[in-house]
Structure formats: structure tokens, C-alpha cells
Image (cartoon, rainbow over the protein chains, first blue to last red):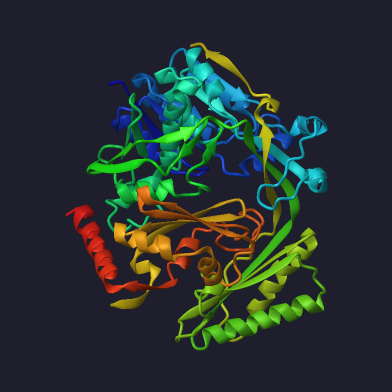
Length: 455
Length: 127
């Protein structure tokens, strides 16, 4: 039976590089997907590109490519990456230079772009589409229109497949959905299209893509299995063996650390989804409520009976808009009476803000070590705690007011109770808020090209 | 015999974010525990447990095939990762918070859960 092996080489911007290199060296994967984009990474990359038209892609692609290609090219492993960010063509030009410098021979790079709908968002609105906020239900983006800094559609695998058919040895994309980096090669290898006939197979591909797309998060990272994860400091990244009959095995790089078992796969199936019967991706809708898992060996979990529905008519779009500033401060109080000192300091800071007449959109205080994570659900008690921190965070309309939060927190260092301890002041940061929405699929002008690299 | 116990003893949890939505996966340690939890845990109970941290609605999706529950908490993360004042911007701790919740359960299920814990240590620990 035909089988295709695909690995995940990166689950987020800043992920580890060595597990990706080890996967290429030690396993028999045909493809490695690299996701580097979080919900608002595009807003940061757009800002970079506005300052310098030759930037706007994920800079990591340079060291990553230098380490990966000398291993992947001789083995014929194809890299599919969304590190192109807001400027996939420039990213491809940088990769082209690396290929030539390293004398890796002739290669073809497929470049997929066009997910940025901001240049023509008003045209789409002109047609009557309002970009309703999926979180808040607010009907129209009119209120935030002038503050929008990014609007990127999560596009599907269509053009990844097309460029693989055109002979691409590597694919660089913009804001293609993380999931499509895995669905694309599977659809290409098995010759599926979006017709009714392959709906279940694509749903299976969407499911396994979801399971592996966050790299170490299914191999023992962020896991309830942390106590039994083998050599977690040498954690391996996940690999899916996908079979023609629609079944798949989730495993990881041979000889690597970490763990793959029924629990780590369950954890990830449940992770960051909404309705589990309708996991919506641009290439298909997966139903996680029918599938079955079977541990068929150490670090091997088989996934069977994957079901789903045809791809939706709309694509998710992440709109980022400017929404004020956040100022933050931290101070720590040692035993004795650590919690009482923190409460005293809180009152001090609140009174200072009143005196200075700071207008907050929101102000929050946490006792570090007591309720910063558990919030209102935790009892606030001092059982002779060795130390308690006070965290002060305020969101304001202006940078000046956020600076006050930062400054008053530092004044606490010299005017607070006995023993107050502190580190380095935190920088004020601008807030780009997220407005999640949908856009009609046909309104998004995706495009692709093949870039030839000669020796 | 019934006993009052924290959810931590009966299930695993992992949580994350989608914008301002916090999603918590609850994985029962046995089939019997899943049957019990899917009948016992209600959206109202979850919302009350978080004492005002959740500004929107709560939905619970049963997943008998994985002996798990997917719990969706709307408007629970202070506006979402990039504008929230929460230190835990992406809601990773929300699942652990839910594990504090107390339920009244048959002693037999507590014993079952302990057996699963022992089995996990035995089966997966590399000697």
C-alpha cells in the first residue's frame, strides 16, 4: 500500500532547529512542513515590510535553510514552509542565494502568495461583506477600519499542490494555514482533488495535519506525560506515516527523546479547537468525534476511521488593528509577611495612579505565586510564603499613560515596604488586537510562481 | 461509597486559545470516569468555578471516542493574546485551573483513576 511520510519541522516562530535537522538526517520523511506564523505575526511582518520592502519574511528562514538544505536536498526531502510571511518572494530570493552559495545544484522553488487582503479589503466591503467579528459578534469593521494594520486570509493547499505538480523542490508561502502545509503534499502524492470523491481522505489529512503541526506539542511537550517523557531535552519532532487507505501512524524521529502515546495524541486532538465535529480548515472540515486511536508500539499511535466534510466556502481571516498600549511592572516581596506587603504595594500603586489621573482602558494586579495564574478561582492565603510578587499591568489609549504604569512600578522599588526586590523595568508595548473574521474564498486573490535556481 | 474529590484525580487537561476563546480538553483516565464526567460536568458548573473570569458562554462537547470533553469558554482571555493583561496570555493555565474543581464521585472511580496513573508510570517509563 502506498504510504507518504511527512514530518513537522517547526510549530511556531522561534521553535527549536535541531530536531528538524535530526529528522531530516535520521528518518525517511519525504516532506517536512515548517510553520512559523502565529495569529498576529503577520502584523509584525507587515510593519517590517513597510519600513524596508526587502524584509517582511521570517528571518529564521536563512539559518534554517542553511542547516536543512544540505541534508534534505541529497535525500530528496521537500520543505514546505510559510516563513515567506508578508514577503514570500523576497524570502525565496534569499533562499536562492543560499542554494547557490552552498552549490546545491539546480532547484525549483514554488512561491505562494496573495493571502494579504488589506490592499483590496474595501473592494470586498463594497460588495456588501462586513467582516463580522467571530469573537464578539460585532457586525462591521467600520469602527476599527482606520486602525487596521494587517488582514490576512488563511489560504488552503491549492497552490502548494499546483507548484508541486510543476516540479517544485521546495515551497515558500505567505499566510497559508499551518494545516495546508501538510494537506498539500498528501493531496499531491495521492492525486486527490477537492471533488466529493476525496472528501473523507482530505478530512483525514486535515486531522493528521492538526495532530503534528505544533511540532513538539504532540511528542511530549506541554504534556501531562511530562514525567514519563524520555530525554525531553533531546525531544524529537512528530512524523505522520499516511497510508492510501486513509489510516495514519503518528510517530517521531527514530532515536529522539520525548514520547508519543495515546495521551499525547489525544491532548493534541483536543488542543485549540472549537466544535470537535467541525474542525474547519481551508481544505476540508474534519470530524474528530469518529476517529479511533490505537497504540501499536512504543512511540507509535495509529489513527483510524477519520471522517469529515467538504471544504467551506469561506476562509478565516485575521484582521489586526492598533488598540492602545500596555505598560507593565513587577516587584517582589520576601518573607516575613510577603503577601501583606504585596497588598500594601498594590494600594500604594493604585493611589499613585489616582493622584496622577491616569485613564485606564483596563488595569490588572496579580500576586505572583498566589493568584497570577489561578486568578479568582484560587484562594488568596499566606501560608508563610517565602516570597510574593506584585505584577501591575495597564492598558491605555496613549503611550504616555502606559509609560506612567512602568514608571510608578519602578518607584515602588524605593518607596515600597521593607525588602522589596526588583529586576529590570519592562518596556511599554503597542497593542495589536485581533479581529477574527471570514472572507468569501473567491474574493482572495492567491497566486503562485515557480522560481528556478540555476547553478 | 461517595467521596468529594478534585477533578485532577480523575482526568488530564490541556488548554489553549483561539482569540478570546479559551478551550480546555479534559481527558478522562478511564471509560467509567468519562461516563461519569460527561453526565456530571455542566456549563453552569464550569462557569461558576472560574468565578467571573469567563465573560461569555460555556459549551461542552462530548467526545466518547476519545473519552474526552472539549470545553469552550467564550470571552475568557481578556480580549485575546495580544491585548490581554493576563500574564498567561494564551490560556495555558486554564485547564489546570479547571482541575481544581470538586466533584462528588464513587470511590470505585477514584481507584480506577489511580490504576491508570500507575499504569502510565509503569508502561512508559524508560528504565
